[in-house]
Each structure stands twice: as C-alpha cells, then as structure tokens.
Image (cartoon, rainbow, N blue to C red; front, top):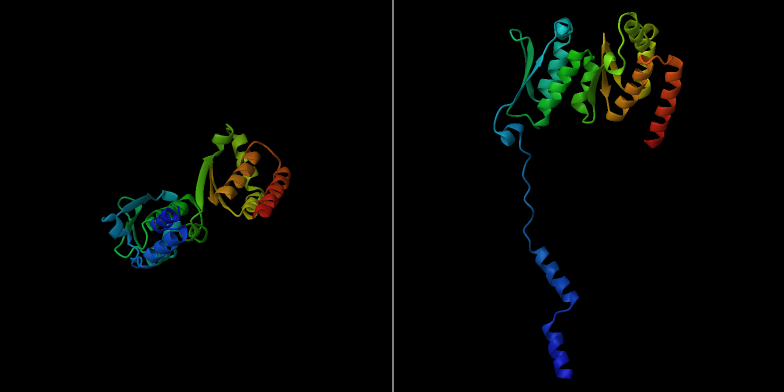
Length: 226
C-alpha cells in the first residue's frame, strides 16, 4: 500500500508545482510590442471630404470670423478647410498628418453649428469635448401655432431683452439659438433635455416664473447627482 501511494504522489504533481511551472512560463514570454498610433490616412488609406452648405444670411458672419474658424481647424485638428465660392459650401479634407479619423467629423459639426447661428467661441467647444451635441426642433413640433400666437410664443422663449433665454442657458449650461420657428440647442445630452423641456413649457403657454422655479429644482437635483 505504501509503494502504490508513493507512485501516485510521484506521478501526479501538486497544485503548487503547477502554479510554479505556469509562473516560470509567463516570465519567459517576450515583451509586448508597442506600435505608434496610426494616422487617419494610414488607417483608411484614402482622403475623406466633408461639405457644409453656407446659407445666404451667414455669409457676412463667415467673412468676419473666418480666421477664428480657420485657426483651430487647420492648426489644432490638422484638417484642410476652404470656402468654395462657386458651390457656396465649406469643404473639409483630411491631411497626411491628421492624428485621428474623428477629427474630420468634429470639424464638420463645428462648422455646421456656426452655420446654425452659434458664436465661434461657443461652437469651438465641439472640437475640444466629446460629449457635446446640437439638437434642433421647430415650434410646430411642440404645438401647432399660427399668426400672432406663434409670434407670442417666440416672444415668450426670448423674454424681455433675451432674459428668459439667457436664464435657461445659464441654468442648464447650454447655448440656445432661436432662428424664427427653429430652435437649436448646444450642450451635453442631459443638459439639452432639461433646456428643451423648459422651452417646450414656454411654447405650451406656461408663465416664465413657473418655468424658472421648475428649472431651479431640476438643476439642483442634477448638481446633487454630480
């Protein structure tokens, strides 16, 4: 009986022996290779384009702010940008030294936000932050209004001297553009939802004071979560 037990012990290695042998094998593995990040052209192998149409009422602001738009796009994001006067579009193109593929789409969103009416200082945040979006909707999407009723709704959204719009922007940390019937909101997903709910309440006829109080409670709750 003793002989058989000795044979079994010599034939079957213990768990400690297995662990030590596995550890010895891991130590002998070659080091993990490190490769430099591929550029946009190396990953895709071809040049990509984006074209953003320029509405007629944005020609003058575009001429005035061209260098402020050109500098971050060309120098920081490494994307070629030019104005095609014949087609009336801004054209964007990747370069050999474009560091990331997503830079082209970021620049397209930045230019599109400027065309919607946002200031360059506000729209440039789309280049620097990943969780910013632009959402657009019309007054008719919330409630069908015509004539004087629609004009009064636009007046409620802006407030006297733009007070209501500025208050919603400051509370929700968003930027709002009211372009006739269309409303554009720039911000993070959660903040856009809060601002949109406040604007919809104003369109439906809620007084500004009631919207302010609700906005304060919602923003306080969001601050507690953060």
